[in-house]
Length: 287
Image 1 (cartoon, helix red, strand yellow):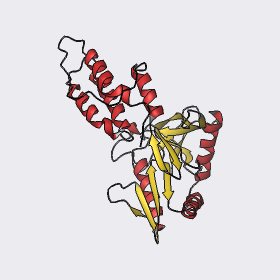
Image 2 (cartoon, one colour):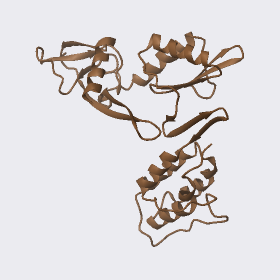
Image 3 (cartoon, helix red, strand yellow):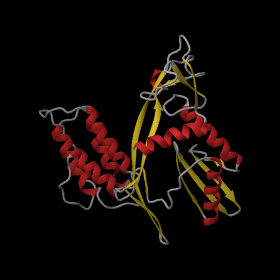
Image 4 (cartoon, helix red, strand yellow):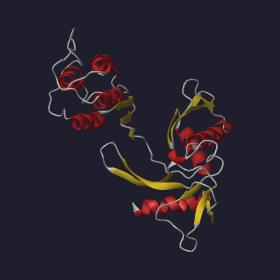
């Protein structure tokens, strides 16, 4: 991670993110912290270690800390100027205005290159070249793209690298819990790795698979005598299952059923509903 941290600081210098200035009077300094992340491939192998220096934006005050921001990195005090702080010249991760600033800059650039925004999803950008199409999907600073020709893919990669410093990960095989397989037969997605990790997280690992996600005409009974559980735990489990419907829309109805017990759930109700309705059916298949 030391190399990743140094790489982040080098980028700050290259992009002129900040400059060292005397600490102003009556100004609250926003402190920073390091966030570490490991990027994995679809098999769980390490692709890249990432270190990101982010601002504690929750300390910003409306109409006060939005025009000018001063950051003090823990452990990065300038030895020659111990009473100085860094004045930010550009938006930094963690600041409340940072996501909007990045999106505005990126979308303006793409629109200037003949892209148009999706009508329903404003993070989807589309470019038409005659009968060919180029689709670009943005999630924060992660970007995936697809095109009807390899030439369009190369064009977009070169276009982005000419404007931003980017690392190209190649043919996509894993993205936010989605395993992606591409072949002449088509593009297929599944979430088996995410599903198995979810089963382990909630302690439901040793069950046999079944053919359908729920029993016909089954009913989720109230467990009036059971031990109540934290509704946040139950809602967290349901949220995990809802994310699985990206590749398994067939379990959506079963998940809607177990959501009925969200407000007053017990441990036996939680275990029974998960065992009966969802767990045995989410391991393998995808779209």
